[in-house]
Every structure is written in C-alpha cells, then in structure tokens.
Amino acid sequence: MRSFAAVDLGASNGRVMVGRVGPGEVNLTEVHRFANEPVHAGGTLHWDILGLYRGVLDGLRKAGPVDSIGIDSWAVDYGLLDESGALLGNPVHYRDTRTDGVKIPIKSDKLYEVTGLQKLPFNTLYQLVAARDTPQFAAAERMLLIPDLLAYWLTGEMGAEYTNASTTELLDVRTREWSLPLLAELGLKPSLFPPIRLPGTTIGRYRDTPVVAVGSHDTASAVVGVPAVGDRFAYISCGTWSLVGLELPEPVLTAESRAANFTNEGGVDGTIRYLRNVMGLWPLQECMREWDSPDIGTLLREASREKPLGTVVDLDDPDFLRPGDMTRRVVDKAGLGADATRATITRCIVDSLALAHRRAIRQAQSLSGRTVDAVHIVGGGARNALLCQLTADACELPVIAGPVEATALGNVLVQARAAGILDGDLAALRGVLRDTQQIVRYEPRGDAANWRAAAARIAVTTVNAG
Image (cartoon, rainbow, N blue to C red):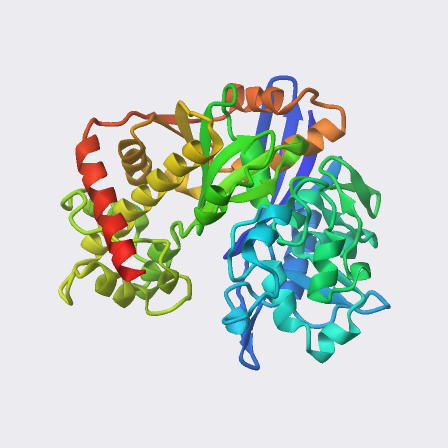
C-alpha cells in the first residue's frame, strides 16, 4: 500500500484526504477539513487565499509521510504575481459583480471556434478584461489559477495545469495551448500565462515530497472518479454546481453546440468533457442558509411527500446566480405565494434540478451524436436519494450514484498511476473504483409523461421570459 495526499478545495470548504492504494484496494481518509469563507472588502468579494493555504499546510502536516501530493479546486479564478513572484492581492471570487456588463471585442462564434467554451460571465477571460485597466493588473507578470498558485507556493514552480487552463476561455481547444491570436486581440501579454503542464507530471517538491499535477479542475478529477463501463455514459458532478455532460474524444464546435451553450473542457488523458454548467444545489444551499441550516435528511423526507412536479422553475435563470435572498427569488419565480413551506420550496428546487439534468443530457446526446445507457451522479449530490431518483425518472435512464468522493479518488488515482502503483487507461482506473467503492442504482419509475409535460412547461416559460 502507498499513500497519496489529495488536496480538494471546494466553494465552501477544503479538505486534505489521504488515499491508500494497493492491489485491488483504494481507500480514503479525511485528515483535515477547513472552511473556505469568502470575504467582502472594499466592495469586492475575495477568496481568503492565505487562509486556504494555511489549511492546506495544516492538512499536509496531519497527513504525515505520503508518496506525493495533488491539488484540485474550482475553476476560472486566479492570482496575479509581480516580477518577484509576490501575490498582488487576494484573488477575486467568481461570484463578484465586477464582470457584470463586460464586453468582449470578439464575436462569440469566433471565440467558440477557438476555445469551445460555454459563455459564462465569470470565465477567466471576462475577469481579466474587467481587471485589465487596474494598477494591480499593470504590475502583474504572471497569472496562476488557484491550484497552480498553491502548487507554486509549495514548490516554487510556476505552470498551468491543462484541465483547469481549459476553463479560462483563453486556451485553444485543438492545440491545447494558450491561443496567442486571442490574447493579442484582447490586449493580454502572452508572458502573463505560464507553460501548460499535463496531469501526471511532477511539478516539483514540497520539502522531500513530489507534488504531482492531477486533473486540477475538480470536475476533471471527478470524471476520472466515475465508475463507468465503456463510453456510453453521462455524468453529473453534483454539488454547488451540477456539471452535466459526456466524455468525448474530440470537441463539438458546431453552431448548434454554441447556441445550446455547451462547453468543451479538457479532461485527463486528452479527453474532452463536453458539458453544461447547471446551477446545481446552490439555490437549495442558499435557502437552507437562510433557514438557519435545518437537517437536510429531514427536509428531503418532507419534500418527498410533496406533490411531484407541482411547481418548477428554470434553474439556469441567471437571477439564481448571486447569493442572498434566495428563498424569495425561488418563491417569486415559481409563483408559490408567501405561505409556501420549506418542504414545498425544497421539492420545487429538486424537481427543477432533475429537469435541468434531463435537458442537459438530452441536448448533449443530440449535439454529440453519442447515445448513453446510464447516468452517473458523483459528488455530494450522490447522497441525495430524492434527487438521484428524480433524475432517473426525468432522464428515463438508470442513475448510478457514487462515489461521493469521486474528486478526491480521481486525484489519488492519477497520482498512483504517476507513481507506477496503477497502470492502464481511464477504463482501468475506473475498474478499480467499481471493485472498491460503494454505489447505488436507481431505476426510472415509468412516469415519463409527467416529466415530459413539466419539461415543456419550463421551455414555454423560458421562451416567454426571453
């Protein structure tokens, strides 16, 4: 058995997990968990990056001796460094309002042809354009995405891991390098962007321990952790966001794909994560925060007794993106009325999320020409039995839920393969997961007509709102 430390940073907390890998065995132990609490300062929402780094160091100390370290986190956010390598201020949170109204001087069809990325107002491209005229940006010599920044502080080595760089809307989806023509059109100096490195390569050493590039976009690691058989599967990495899509060998860059707002992000072993960002459990998380954090199990049991598909909303509505006052926004959009109960609001959100999953999976199949036989839900959403069952019902496909810790497992498996403990392609790594991890299967219950009618109601509402 060999040990690997997986640093996994999420929107609300970070963890350091130790994965032990041996013949026919993979197990995880959480050794440290720490809060990730953004901070408003000077009218801007920032990440507390030094607090996160302290949490990483505390976790690595508690992990003890390991064979290597890998870091994954959310995408798009970054830190700017000056010529000495010092950080120029705390990284800005992607939910900050600074990108509101930012205009890009490049036609969207051309941008999609180069990057293959879904248009999202918080992509790194929009953030850099918003920051371009600031004194901080003028002093910047390097841009490092969050996992690369932490790896730099551990090792002193700068670089840009491929899967996370692919989410910036600045990487050429075909060459897998920074798009120099695109940078020139945007007035961004190429020297700001460090060399691309691939998952499985050694970045440097923290003390005497190798730090290895993994799929540093957490979804890239989560997709490695999908225990699928073959390639006829859809995945949903479900947490604050639901990342819903397919794993493909090549990007889909058609006009129809762009119109449907699908993205082509880089995956481990040169794969393409063809997906849409769906709002995920964020609205429910925000409502629960406003309700003083009731027990989620009790809330979901009460919601399961509510009328199925009684009220639904379009969770892709940008009005749900920002924090605060979420209960009122859901009630207003759904037309529930002031006397709506928490159970009714919860059922509305979960039904609506299942419908969003259905829409994204059906569109992905149509646009890619790839038919799927099952849907894999990994991440925290795999614990939500109501959501998993409703997704199976909505998609009219079996749902395989788990592992919950797919991201950390994918992180560890890439490290273990780099160390020579495991070998083979992604199918081989996923075979190890099927043999070692707990998964639950949900079959659709045959109420497809009701889901089709609800999907049609959402479509009509969306058209009318547009």
